[in-house]
Length: 521
Image (tube, rainbow, N blue to C red):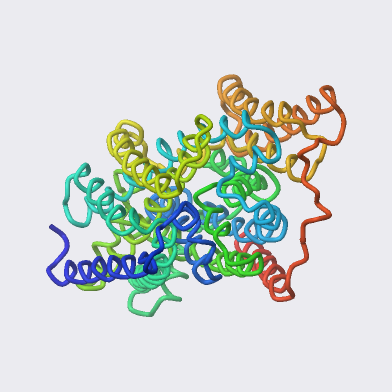
């Protein structure tokens, strides 16, 4: 047992506080029964600060903290492109995608696809997302989270995963998205404070008693190869992050898919009080994303010097946690668990939303009672956790860098998804068959390139498949009908004008990114 009594007391206080707040925000007014909108979209009551915090809490989980730190240990600062490029992607999502989604008043991404195309597209994508969320996202969060618990507390991996499942159920199953989103405020504060403390402490260790700045300079001097943002073709990890593709290639496709069309991320913005409130929340999240590499990547690079020769890179962050002082170690442990259970709760809620609203609610002609749909959603949440618990070790137990595995696997499908949504929203001649051709063609083309052109970096493959899927969708649509579709989005009816504050935030994010890439080129 690596955690002391003080550490466990700090952690226990966090658990009790989180559970208490979740129960308070989940309470309903006398006489009101929680319906589907309350459970899956928090009754459209989320303010901007809850949206922004919840976006980050859902995103930053074990796959980022543990997995990305492991990639920082192995590759270096270049892996931070996933975080920094996400900031500008969020600004784009808030300006051009969110107005369309809120105009349609949707619950899920598959639901939007039926509004724009037809039921076949909705069902196909609903089944696809359920598979990815359960067998890729949920399993990875549980496995990597259990790795941290195992390292810190010596708990068996299976029981650690079971603990994470039960913890997430305890505070989120009853209250739904509202409980998740409002408790995410605590999660993010804890994550940022604990993460920054660990980063500053590890850098101070490298500073030989002369402070954080000295430690950073020492790290850059002794491991300069870890601070290349744009990797050269002869770099040993070029295949993971192929040069300029992180700026002008496949990285954009990956980020647009994740932040714009990913149910368990975008669901927070769909629950906003208003469009303006949702956009403010997205801008808040964009600035937090700029901070994340300091919390999740820099410690991994520091561990390269502090903990050389680790058997597995993904053990870098958990091992660093053991170097923290008593009490603070418990706080950082709570921060990591906070990030993990928040993502688990977010994923299970989104899995429940998609299954309930896109599959179960569409079966037969019966109009289901709203309270019944909430019960189905809770049952599906439980079932998804059981499946992920059983399959996590077989799927992820043999990977050294789980974060890279997740990116490559999802990269088989994301090009077609992005084409499907972009053309669906912004080209009124896109047909349902054209969209399906892009979505299904993405998997076929990606697997084909993987087999016959294995040396092609996966991010370049994502960019290439995106272009081919776009051409395929356009060709099918033109050959099939070549006319404006009856379900096309009327862009003239959508308000794309953003506030002055949002525009300033967008410019600020862009300038910060330019400065960061200029400094670390």
